Image (cartoon, rainbow, N blue to C red; front, side, top):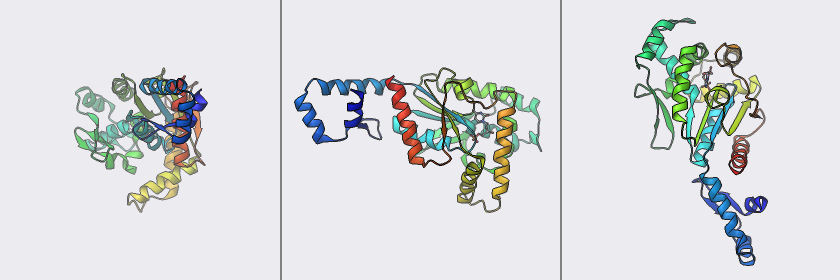
Length: 278
Ligand code: DC
């Protein structure tokens, strides 16, 4: 039954059920008038079942791109938790709470406690979402090398993580959310119905980030610097005391070193369908 359903139906961009092959469908419908409505009922049921989707993995594996694409395709909210740690880092840099690699943790804790670091996501007219720090769009600044170089240090601080996890759990409490990060399937939503662990070789990931920086007009950072940053972040992320990056036991691994974005998106979508149908 499900094989037949998959063959003749698909979901469009608005997550509406479409008929893939109208002629065969009509023939099927004529010859079996009870069977086809049953197919549609199953789809309607799966469309309404909301789940939590956790996408964790190494830095620069394209988690955000694929998570965003999936969220848009299935009509879910998307939360980029890395952007939240980046926004806290930007705040700390701007307020001189980081000197070199040393963080003034006492002061940072006070600022957080007083609610002076408000992170929100604002939808744009183009259907995207931008990260805001205290109401201001900081998307461009949080992706800079200045922030990338020290974000792992901020993300390793226990009280920062505790506060971010609390906010992330609140954002996903009603399900219907795709959240990407490092600890979503292990700490934030250990009961998520769908967990993916994305990985790729360090060189492939560095090349992706390097291309991104060049595309944004950064002509000074070298490939070697980016590779060093990728390796260093892997080391800090997976060896830190607080919620180290690790694959959840029930996560499905996606090594996308040699996969196109389209293939990844389809892989993810099929996994989603299998989860909502089970
Ligand atoms: O995904 P990203 O590269 O934008 O993440 C930025 C940093 O934040 C990275 O060092 C890992 C850290 N991070 C984390 O510790 N936990 C998360 N849930 C998300 C990101």
